[in-house]
Image (tube, helix red, strand yellow):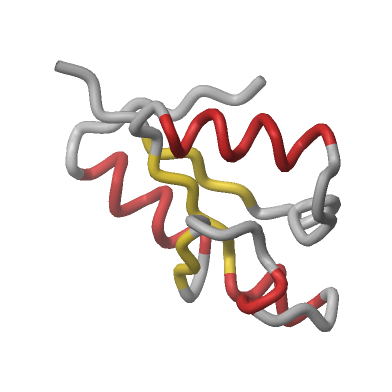
Length: 79
């Protein structure tokens, strides 16, 4: 079994309803991918977690979340 967690440190377009990225994010969520946004990135762009696409989780710091997941055996794949 695979467990995929998509962590983003950049919030551009994550709060735009009916955008292409919303469709992609919802597709990932519907297919079992955990999508995680960084609270620090939200703060930097004056965004609220309530503005995000439904189903996106928020963690305090995306960089820390990445390090924790790597320590748990997750692989980091940068596009």
